[in-house]
Image 1 (cartoon, helix red, strand yellow):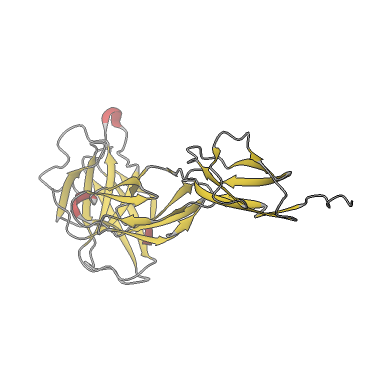
Image 2 (cartoon, rainbow, N blue to C red; image 1 turned 180 degrees about the vertical axis):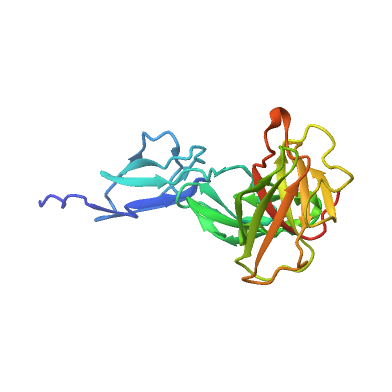
Length: 302
């Protein structure tokens, strides 16, 4: 009597992939003969074998993966190994978590870190911030935000990026006007006259390298080391004569705003101003200086 042929088995699928949430699957075993028997086992703790649903089907379940790392397990079935791969949980982080936009607006880039298969979006919750690029994204990437120029009160708002809140702020314009210094070149000349340290005169040349700026346009001298009242007779001796406006910078130093003689400033236009300071001496008889010179478009306020 001839011996029966040896049993062989075909198992499928040989590999299975699950998302971090886990789920259920089945392996189908096809024996070479109906009389052939087989078994299944696993040493992977997050894979559980269920009762056979038929003589050829082995169900199993995969538990949720709470780690951000991918993991791999296996099932031994009918003398073969089946590989089970499960992706990591979708965890997200952003950097930086907050930012301050310039008064003139501009862009800011936020880095998103996430596993490669994890999707995310970025949505602005503020009408002065726009998501320019990067959304929707997947895995690690960048989001670019753009803010409008601020011509009023300080701004605060949020952008939801990958489910995380990005906090944004924007300062109000100094002296209540829009800072346009980025498009106006300011060149300060040497001191032209110094009258016994009681007054001194300096020439300042401004060139508009951008679009036309409507009137009024102001030159602002920031940081004058004034220990007493900032002006004599309300003028500070500045030429051309007022209107002048005095306000405080964030550091509490004096700001003197001098209106441009031409009012408006056309594209490409150059204006030369001669400014005389009186009194022209700070403590110790040293002529006053300033640490920044800026240009504002709009009407400064006290």
